[in-house]
Amino acid sequence: MTTTSPGSPVSVRIRLCRAADLDVLERHMPSPGRTRRHAARFDRQEQGLSAFLTAWTDDDVPVGTAQVLWQGCAAPEVQARFPGCPELNGLGIWPPELRSRGIGTALIRAAEERVRGAGHALVGLGVGDDNHRAAALYLRIGYRETGCRYLDRYAYLDDSGVRHEVADPARFLVKELGGAASGRAARTP
Image (tube, rainbow, N blue to C red):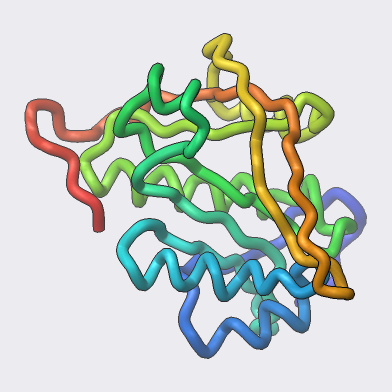
């Protein structure tokens, strides 16, 4: 990777995850405990339920991930208000020193292009109540508040194999995507 000063942009390539990427992702961006988060996201992609995007430096080091969940946010509150709205989910940049360097924005733009290319005019994402930095980014790049609040529920296995259930308060934001074909049914790639 090119040496850059703190805060300067980092050049990355964004592409769909491949099976051969999984071990590299775990080495550079480890899943918590025994969760194998990258493998689970890849499996969803293979089933046609998502697009699992990865960001790579010029040195072929993974530094970010995101996924598009084609069937939207699982929370019933969100499904009721935004049925059929794909959700951008699981945005992560690693290591933390690379945050605020354009990688997250590049992943979001790539996800939006996939959603638009699939014929959807709207994309949504959840942001935790305590994640002010991410919320500021989303609002700055065109997402808007909807007033839709929910609990973001997920689970993980710790290093001992104990399952932990988490429910983080969150809000759902949406962005209208220009250029999506109106009048035709959206397709899921």
